[in-house]
Length: 136
Ligand SMILES: *[C@@H]1O[C@H](CO)[C@@H](O)[C@H](O)[C@H]1NC(C)=O
Ligand SMILES: *[C@@H]1O[C@H](CO)[C@@H](O)[C@H](O)[C@H]1NC(C)=O
Ligand SMILES: *[C@@H]1O[C@H](CO)[C@@H](O)[C@H](O)[C@H]1NC(C)=O
Image (cartoon, rainbow, N blue to C red; front, side, top):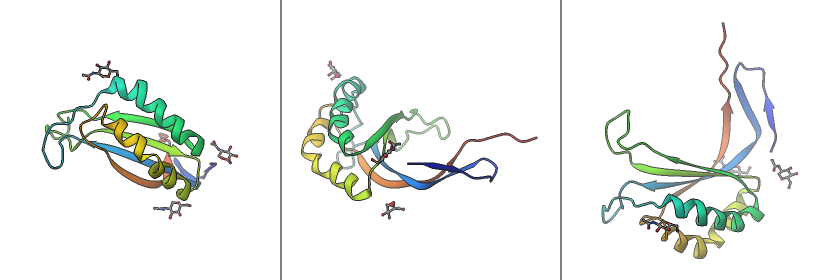
């Protein structure tokens, strides 16, 4: 991936959009309404190394996970999702979809070891981003 820095104030645009896979864990189970249980220790110590070993050779390049504050400090309510992980790739869309789907028989059951809810998964390209700079 390479990034082109344009002379448009703070806007940094990517001329080759980075593909990203986002996995979101709902606060409540969609059918049973059970609250989410999520074992971060297992996630970090076992799930991430497993996923890195499966997706890394296919082009997974970086990841992070956000834990949303509950209650949401903006609304005072329980947020719809409690965790969201992001995996950015250096690979074509076809290769990414195949890498993810081919490994579901391994990654799916492993999710059951740290969460009682399977994540919702989204695919997209990071279209633009920026670093904020303050002007006089
Ligand atoms: C992405 O992959 C290409 C081709 O395999 C490689 O040349 C390039 O260095 C990689 N970029 C990053 C950011 O990993
Ligand atoms: C979370 O996972 C860790 C590591 O596998 C395990 O030792 C611990 O017992 C788990 N905690 C719960 C509440 O299941
Ligand atoms: C993301 O990029 C891929 C490869 O360049 C392209 O095939 C796909 O249509 C793009 N998707 C979106 C939502 O822009």
